[in-house]
Amino acid sequence: MKLNLKIIHPKFFTYGILFALTITIADLLSKELIFALLDKTPGQHIRVTSFFNLVKVYNTGVSFGMFNDLQYGKIILIIGASMITIFLLYWLSQSEDKKIILALSLVIGGALGNIIDRAIYGSVADFLDFHINGYHWPAFNLADSSITLGAIILIFDEFFNKKKHD
Image 1 (cartoon, helix red, strand yellow):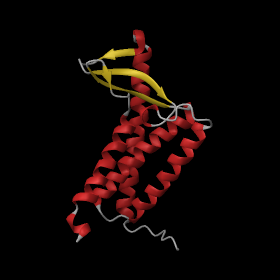
Image 2: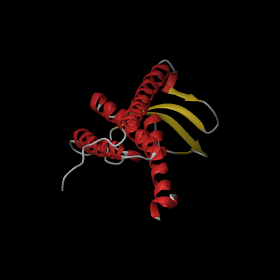
Image 3: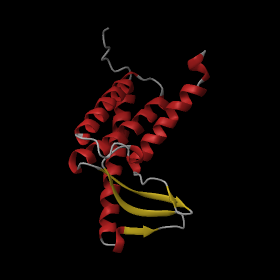
Image 4: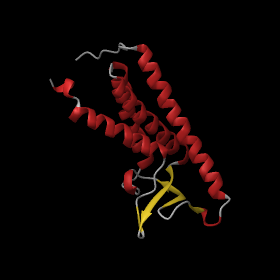
């Protein structure tokens, strides 16, 4: 099996990379700014609305705190996320569909933000806390939101893009 390393649309690939880097920078800056604000706040907690708080949480695992106690977790998760990101970059380089390029850029940008966090701090900084009646959704960040939105676009495109299936 020969891997085609030719970039199909260099302009779209460049835009995709620039958008991914913008997401990464926005994620890292938002974490720095919010955590700096929370460091000056008693209890490191800010109630924004009746259902939303800003909090300071470090997640050493993955979604919902899974694998928090995994031996060598930091290294395993960095390598795993990096390998997936490399695959997504290849997919991005081969894509001609602007919607797919947008979705992949969102996922890549978010993944890079969380990879950088994990590499520097050994965990991912989360600060968005939604709750209702005492039940809290696990805290998350801009990178997580970006990854989720990109994944939703990819899933919807796969199931509802009639041209692809014809």
